[in-house]
Amino acid sequence: MQITPELIKYLESLARITLTEEEEKKVGAQLQDILTYIDMLNELDTEGIEAMSHSFPITNVLREDEVKSSMTPQEITANAPESSDGAFVVPKTVTE
Image 1 (tube, one colour):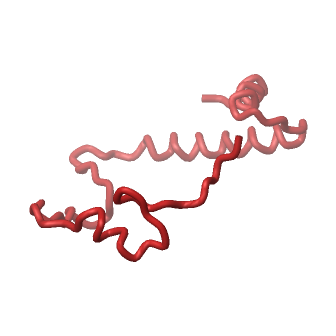
Image 2 (cartoon, rainbow, N blue to C red):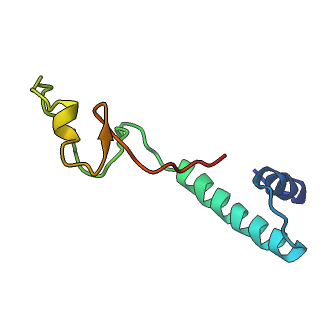
């Protein structure tokens, strides 16, 4: 893929940015370098290589879900500066 000035202009509009002509040339060259490197990686023979997300094997360590007793709303709000009907009362943050 070739990076063209039209593509740079299109990317500018997508990103909602404005670049100077000098910046456009610089970004175009950088994007072209990235694509050239990706093309080089595509030439590698990866036949028989298993896809992986990490360089070492990892597994999730999950615990079993267990039903446990919990606190009542009154116990939870017992130490609150102010509570009402089992809920915390906080200062109003939205004004009209």
